[in-house]
Length: 68
Image (cartoon, rainbow, N blue to C red):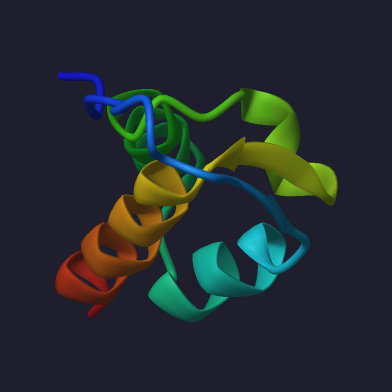
């Protein structure tokens, strides 16, 4: 399910996706699924993305929840 974006949802440049995913210790398939679920591109694993803040927040929350 994609994260809903409101008209007031600011864009956010986030460079820490690789770190967040590494700390969550997810395998490649789980990483891809998490990014898709949060509405973020697969390229986020390699560096900076610009995305609605709500999607970045969801990524951080879900990664923390799924971490081992």
